[in-house]
Length: 468
Image (cartoon, rainbow, N blue to C red; front, side, top):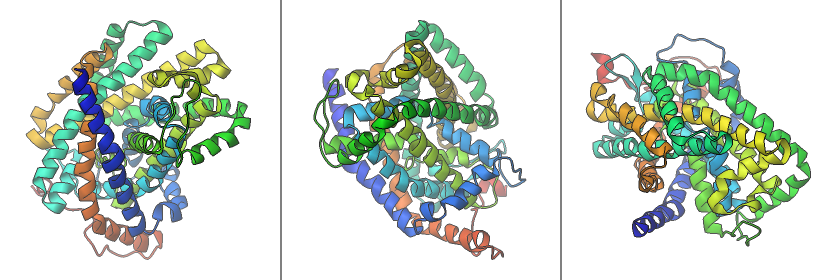
């Protein structure tokens, strides 16, 4: 068993350190250059046409509103990864890991934008009249790479199982520590609650996320920023640590074991991807259901989601454990408790632990709910709509098994399978950058510059399902 775990860990480390980091950065740079650094030059316009349009209604083709698509996609990333995952990255990669998270996020904005543009263009309606899409659709329809599209769907469908287990375990252990709740009961209640949500489809998931996610994100940021403000004198020193040790090793101190440059890059890139999923392609599955008349309009929400996930939430989580010194107070094996310790510095141990546990509970419920939807859509692509619904029961069972700490060997495959998901998506993205550029130029000319007129390129590829 130990040998198997060691092989999996070394394979994952190799892929994330030497293969995926290069692929993700290369793709992000490619799209950033091809799109003329639009995520920086048009950032004000992007904010105006995303968060500035939250309450605007439209009657365009789609199943849910643009904001609901955004919060549904954000639900899959905002949560345990941002709160617990960032301290883990710092514990294993040092403060410099935060720099690499930022780097991946800034260029990842272009990658995620490209994914959603393609997802919107190649989406289609299923048998129930619901809009569906994602990397498997644009890989197959734009490039004709049927095998790669199938592999993406298979890998992602399987990857959801350990992902759900890890998410479920993170919250049950937190609730047990904070309130002494038995993990068996908590796991069962979470599985039932999530089952009620996911059996209502994307519409019910969207109605839950568009109310719960914004409230939880704002509350978490507010309380965390208060702690950082109290320790404001440490902020200059912390930023020096971040920038210095992104390019230089850092020695052991307190409970921190030390880290090299490769570890900073490996954990920064991996956790950066986990936090915003740029390059993974999953966000496009939720965005494909949105109402819009131009792919770029919905893709702007992808840029904004990366900003919220990594630049805001992950940065605040990282600064929280660094300014309070929590990153040096515990060993890497207990890194997930750093946030609790950081909050306890100001709010006390009882409130700090309870606060993090409650936050994780709500975040994990929405995260698992949308992850199950993602997995089900892969099954739908592979075996059809009716058979795919059976995957809901597989994922709900995984919630309970993960909650009680069962099948932990399966958890070890999370990073490895995710690596294959990313590879299947990123390579096609490189080949499809021209289409994304053409659609972006159309948006800039007709809408951003106000020239109007009909599009000179195909913005939406009519599907066979739609034609029938």
